[in-house]
Each structure stands twice: as structure tokens, then as C-alpha cells.
Image (cartoon, rainbow, N blue to C red; front, side, top):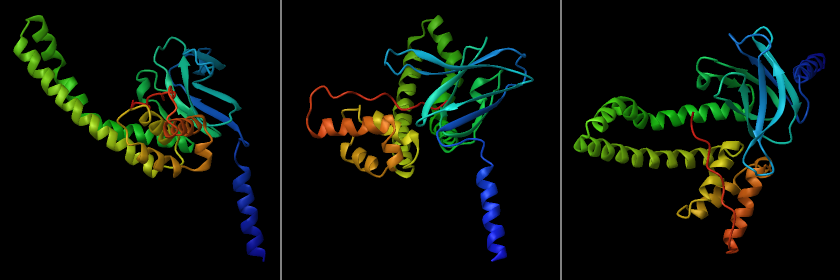
Length: 255
């Protein structure tokens, strides 16, 4: 009995260590090399649908660190915008303790961790980079050659490079689609899965039965997010042959 009591007490301590309650978030960030007093702004898409970004919170960097706290109803994409740095840091704002390590010299190499959806977002992007590596390598290795061919009006070289690029683009595109579907089939709790299916339903050539099957496998919590509800509305409209059904936005691209 004493051992059981000690075990339960230890469990209580573990659960009580969290700094956030239900529906709350805390972003703990490091920004090495960023001067004290520089501004970091938390932004998200304007819910009115006007297409712009709106400011949610603003903090100052102090001794290379910053912290943002607040409340959130469901996971959604947000960005951090640093003063004097044009490229933002995208991440998923959700309940929990989110850690963001900003790399001011290479924003795309900033590190995000701490919550399920952010960990999945990072892994998904890493996996997509592998899928798209061949195309990226081709661009990197042939940009100079293409520029020189354009300057000298070397039509044969230009056409050859374009033909090879288009072939690679198609190959990588098919592999990317396969990866998207595979991911959404195996990650029923991930926000990325919902965004993938939402995008899939905007494609007239998409396999609607597969999309619906994947959606039906989602956890209820994911179904109740904005993209989850949008998928349900879209499927209902398609199945009911309702004209003018709203199209879905594109799935997130790998960094």
C-alpha cells in the first residue's frame, strides 16, 4: 500500500509540473545574437478571410530570450516575425509548452519542438526534403548553366534543361502526393493530415473515396478543428452534388 501511495504521489508531481493548463500555451524562445529590445511579433491569418496577417502579441528580446503566453482553442499555423528580419518563423500554436530556437542567420534552420503537432510538422518537413531533394539538387547544380544559356541565347541547352527539369518535377510531384497520402493515413491526430486532405479535396482528379476514408479515421479532436470541419462540409457538398462547393487551401510546403 505504501509503495502504491508513493507511486501515485510521484505521478501527481509529474502531472503538476506542466506550466500550462487546458487551452493555454507558453512559447519559450531563444534568439541568440538578437539585440536586447528587438521586437518579436506573433501573427496569424486574418480570420475574416481578407488574406492578410494580424498581430496577436508582441514581446521584446531580453538577453537572447523571449516568452509569449496566452490561450488557444485549437491547433493552427502561426508565425513569429522578428524585427529587421524579413523571413518569418512558421509553427503550430497549440496547447502546451512550445520551444522555439531562432537562428537569425538562417531562419529556415530555426528549431521548433515541445508539442505533438510541432514535432510532427518538423518531421514532416524533414521527410519532404528527402522526397524533393533530387529536384532541389537539379536546380542548385544547373542555375548557373541556365543563366549562361539564356545570356548567350543557347536555345538547345535551355530546352534540354527545361525538359529534364519538367521530367523531374513530375516525378517528384507524384512522390510527394504519395507521401502526403501515406502520412495522412498513418497520423490520425496530426493537423498536417487534415490540411493534406483539405487540399486533396480541391483537386478534381482526387480519389474522393480515399479522402473520405482517411477523414473518417481521424480522431474526433482533429475532426473538430477548422480544417476538419471544412473537410466534412466539402465532403457533404460533393456527395450532395451541391454547386459552388468551397475549395480548400493548399497543404503546407516543406521548408
